[in-house]
Length: 82
Image (tube, rainbow, N blue to C red):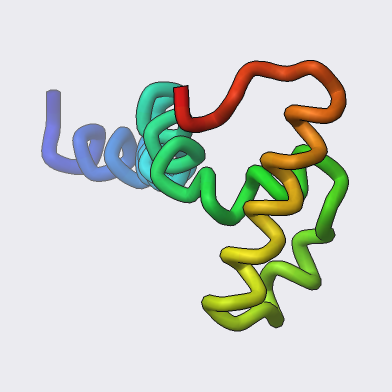
């Protein structure tokens, strides 16, 4: 393979490699959701929106998580604590 052919191959491959590097694997996404569950739990339970969670302070987030736990218990779900 000539240098020019190699150069052209690399130029063609870069957009693919850039797109490939921008996505995360499924297990990394799952891990990120698990790590941020304190944020997502009130949203999933319908107690809060993402916008509200973004603006909430630490105490408000704690309260929203407790309300989400109570809602889950009232709906007959399994306790978050185990």
